[in-house]
Image (cartoon, rainbow, N blue to C red; front, side):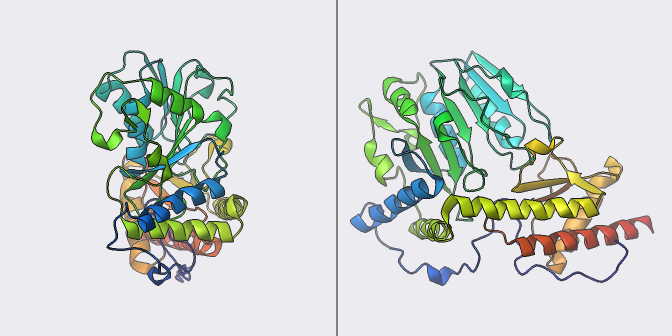
Amino acid sequence: MTSNALPSPPRRPRFSSGPCEKRPDWSLWDLSGFPLGRSHRSLEGRARLKRVIDLSREVLQIPADYRIAIVPGSDTGAVEMALWSLLGPRGVDVFAWESFGRDWVMDVTRQLALSDVRVFDGGYGELPNLSQADSDRDIIFTWNGTTSGVRVPSADWLMTDRRGLTICDATSAAFCMPLPWQRLDVVTWSWQKGLGGEGAHGMLVLSPRAAKRLEAYDPPWPMPKLFRMKADGRIKEDLFEGSTINTPSMLAVEDAIDSLEWAQAIGGLPALLDRVEANFACVTEWLQDNPWCALLARRPETASPVSICLRLTDIDPAQGDRLARDVVDRLAVTGGAYDVGAYRGAPAGFRFWAGPTVETADLRAGLNCLTHAFSEARREAAV
């Protein structure tokens, strides 16, 4: 931290946690086959939508008897579609340790106003005690805390012989971490996270148990059109074959296909996980040389390898926010790293996306630029 020389910036300095970085060497001109101006209900449009579903199943290794749908509203729409359609028959346990998990708490307690709800909350950097989950109840949780850098370390706390449903917001875990499908009944994610696709579209996966609940149960509240997965008491099976409730962007669809085909071409899920592991190893090495910064996650086994949330370790909290904002601005101006400010409400620090579309060399260069920017900002603040 003593050199004033500006480090070489990364070739791709985009480390936003959503929308996330595109695959390496992505170009708009690679999307040559998109049927713009065609109906999404045409044979060609439906075929492209079904291609997204089929590729998602292959890359993520989703069981053949699990249903997959493309839904509106990104991951938020997918989660809320599941909550509004499935909750009510059993008590609910909600686990939250970051901003989006707390959104689901609000949905369950205030919007749906369910009477039998237990909320287990952990502060930023902490994970609530997962052993408190009751397998007779429905369980809602976020696999990877995008805004807190804290993830579920394993699925051992989720029973295979459960009676309730497990509803998992996996938006920043899909394509970045292995998901134990046999322990999950509802899984959601959005295109703009793990593989760097375009926003506005969500993915919803239902296990056979969840599908059975969906068909047998009619919630007592009004169901918005965008959430309706049934008609005349039966599941809309075409929803899980490429039909959509509202009009999707066919350009975004083609972009999703491009990212999934890239994932498949480099070796599928194992290759994606290897890329994530290499990136996290880079972060771990950098932290050893920069003790002024540490992971926000308090326990190593819960640290996210993709949403790298960093806190300042030796800065007065009153000065930390101002200093962190100064560093983020410097990084943007020099091209060292874009969009790496900590999430609003999180402790002062930084957040780097390190998913499989991010090159390790770029991440290393971005972190080196962070070291330099912090040194300069702190030196000037002391003058």
